[in-house]
Image 1 (cartoon, rainbow, N blue to C red):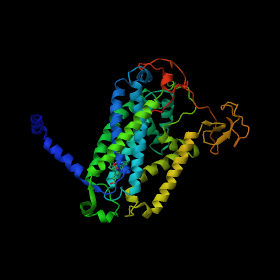
Image 2: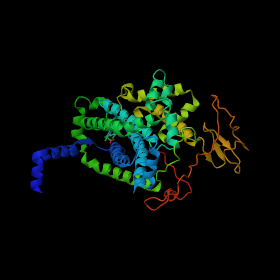
Image 3: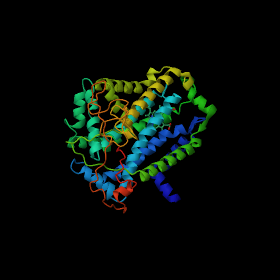
Image 4: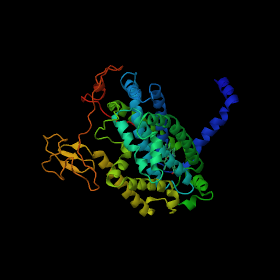
Length: 441
Ligand code: HEM
């Protein structure tokens, strides 16, 4: 063993690597870090599982327009453990977006974006956009009805931007419609460009975090001019004391991921039919606020608002000049952000509930509830006690048609095929009689 160690040391400098790792573990961090400070590591681990499961999926996926759907069908129902790998990838994508958003909120809450960590925050914003980009491009890859039409809607959004919009939408789609060109673009973005960009940005982000250290609760001027080093010498604790929290979070997260993947396996809808728009098509949950906002105001206004918010997010460290970090000393920003977040969640919830039926209540495309008689099928617009008259002719205030519709039911084409794990498609989906749909990332 000693001889192997000496052999390796001579060639790769094992001693230097071990000295570096020990120095990292001994590096002081502020006292009192809690589990909220483990979310960055959790995001990194989730990215790792996405890369691993993505490579396994790519071995069986075909990115041509004609073969994509069939290849995902094969992965889901025929390839040994294909359904599990695919479900881990689908749920991993949802969890990664959630964890990155929570990590950002933690940094915002603790004022960790303030001087001298402005660049760490800006790189973080880039990481958020790339993570959302994974969700957007991955959504199309299964090429079922929801992914095809969801991408059709999503790629229309940039078109509303003044000036460059039209060209951007066309470049994204590779033409006027979602086509084989779009699939090729999205596939390359999803498996090559976005992972490379994310790896590079994570490297830069984590380098800055290690170089500047985790922010203390002290005002920015106290940390300035060697103040951080003095603070750490006085009241810092070694990073190794925080590592058990990181390990616990990662363990809980991976257990949750596998549980979700096994309990709610990713389903597959009917193959995309470009000439037949299905009702109730929606994007992934994290795009629901934008999806719904566009229904309430002109598309261009919504796009300007969304882009302005993104720019403000990037430049937050320069817009917020308050040197204090405690939330109670940043009341205005906290209240404004709280109101903005509540509005975003409310609009997103309307996007989630719209075109759904809950008991005797049918929600239309704007999320307005309509009372429908229990015995009457929801597609029939007649209402007994309606909150608002609901039929195909009802128009919203901005003139859009407001049509109620049934939630989409999955067709059962070859649904009873028995797969390699011996279970039918329906059994794997909980025996509900119809394939369970987990939206694609
Ligand atoms: C894939 C996405 C991301 C990864 C892997 C990641 C990774 C990390 C890690 C490991 C840390 C150390 C502390 C901790 O874990 O909380 C950290 C800190 C930090 N992150 Fe991220 N991050 C990501 C996204 C973001 C986003 C979206 C933002 C904000 C827009 C952001 C801003 C920051 C800042 C400013 C710090 C320093 C905070 C402090 O010193 O208190 N990060 N990040």
